[in-house]
Image (tube, rainbow, N blue to C red):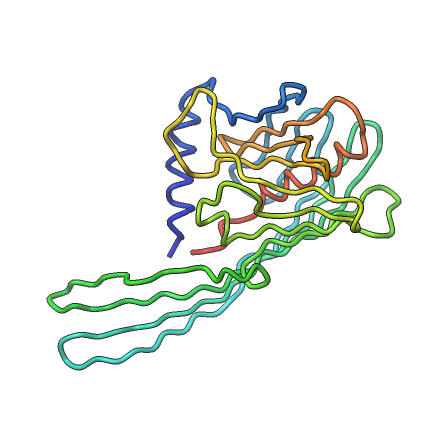
Amino acid sequence: MKSNYYKFLGLAIFFLSSCASMQIDVPNTELVQHPVKGTQGLSINQTVSFANYQTQYVKRSWNKGSKRAFGFSNGQESVMLGSEKKKNEMTFALASANGDISEVFMTNGLKSRNLFVNLGEKVEANAKRYRDKDSLLNSCYAQIYLTNADIPWQMQINNAAVEMYKDGVVGKIALDKENYYTVKTVIKTKPKSISKIPVGFQFENKNGEIVGAVSLIDQGTIFLKKSDEKEKMLLSSAALVLLLRDDFVD
């Protein structure tokens, strides 16, 4: 069963991408837009490219997990509680034209529950559905190794916050206490849309400056500053994590 977030996101992206000029609204005019190719279609031998970057490989471990269901009935009404745990993994390498390479290791985790109440006469109500708010249970984690780096940048995205259409901070990319970026959802678009579903993410440095972003509309668009090649490689890798992570709820 796919979450409402993915259903609504798919519909929102369908309508937004039908407008050729529609794009996320990032309040930093210095960022350069780079359309992404290769994020849709078959994932076998997948190659993703944008600007002067291209993936050397993308490897996935498809959804793994378990489901359980139990309940009771008094003959007229019944209650059933279902639970599911799933996880998928992905690794990819991203190379730039100047020879820099990043290696990324990602895992996506989910733990959710559903409560269904059967009211009789084939009327069934989904009384409650929630994602565990504990980000340790329902998060996207990634380690990003930049060229010649011994210690990776750690990336965490709270899937539960994203799926609840949170407008604000949903994750972090950190090397240590002094070097980090926050990840925020982007809901606003240009031209303006009435949709309240996050259709992208923006990256802010520790000073609160927007230094990058990624749009989920169509095949994706990555927004980068013109300078600082190391930062561009890091944020490009983080953007691809958000573009390539699977819809892990089936």
